[in-house]
Length: 330
Image (cartoon, rainbow, N blue to C red; front, top):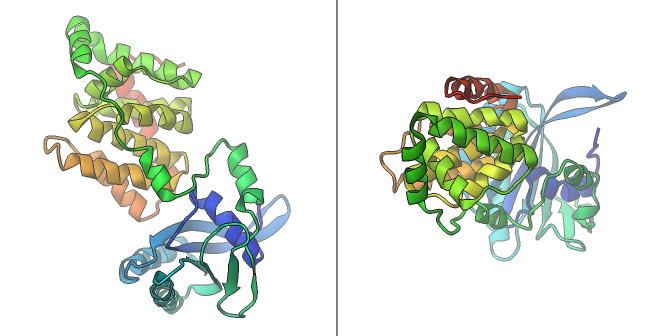
């Protein structure tokens, strides 16, 4: 069990908990009832979320109060990370958020402020006026645990979002030719080849990316079949599918980003899931023919902060869809 008992514990843990170092942000950590791990008792961490510092507190408050009621949240830690002229607005929004949560029975446990989460930056406890300097976040136990689990901690949210941008487009004409040649076996062969890439931790070729995109855009059954590849590891499947999504366009990009969001979600990387959902939404604006029911489902789950286990059952459904196409799973 990793314990967050002091202000510095919280501040140095935030980048690893989010997956990136926040700037101009309000970070909330919701805590539930006590749990015991390895003989140690402490509050259960329910949710870590980040909002833009200048965002009106009403929308985040509605979301967090709903989650708090559903998950029996008892306490909250709030941290403002904002410098310059935006700091005053951020502190006002944090106060509004804190008051709303407290009115719903969620006790404020810590309210912290720092201009930035970098080594040496000064922080202050807004309740006690205790002050200190932020240690190097990369030395925290939470950061070490993240690295041990193979997760990256990006320098900023923008750096995470950049992973979901556009790379050179894989030639869709090649995929179309292969599909014509293989006929009914095209989906099975493509999904099977992509499964090998995931299992071996390889980088999908441009040709394979184009074929995966074509299959994913062929219909809900074909798209859902890819969800079953989480069988070989959600994080590994996410790493491979994100490389596909950057190389395809239109309907194929919407569907591969949706699959990417699912893999990120059940792998426990909520910020990646949210960014992938946003990218899929943006791509759908240019692809009105794209079917988005799965995307809508993931979007609702993400905004309600549903536990990954709640939607992980889609993997079994994906395996079933893939098997109907002739894909075999080891």
